Amino acid sequence: MTARVKVKTEYDDMISDISLVYGNNPHLVKAIIKIESDFNPKAHRKTTKEDSRGLGQINEPTAISLGVVNLDDLFRPEYNIEIINKLLIDLKKRFPGMTDIIAAYNAGRVIKTKQGYYVNSSYVLNVYSRFLAYSILEI
Image (cartoon, rainbow, N blue to C red):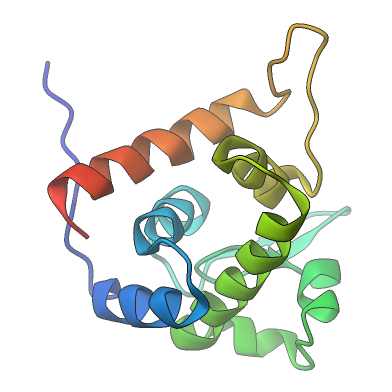
């Protein structure tokens, strides 16, 4: 059975342009968006503990820490992609490796067991495998 990876999306140029301005890898940003919202700018996950919005599923505390004033702006693709990039800049300063950055994006912090595995290892694996696929196939 062959896995199919949808390579082209309507957000590719926007992802690439904004990511390059911030010095981030657009393939990583695209992989995060794929796993977080499957490219749905209206994605909204609201639970008792969390309220996440838009392409990158940015939660309220993170959004506020990055200067977001109106949370509904996170439903605007260009703005959400910019916030994803700002968050990645912050995470790159705090964590040395890509897997730590991906885990921190998802969990807000890096959680490892004594064996060195992430508690949210399936998320890290999903994003990282998409990142590799997009890097090889083109954005």
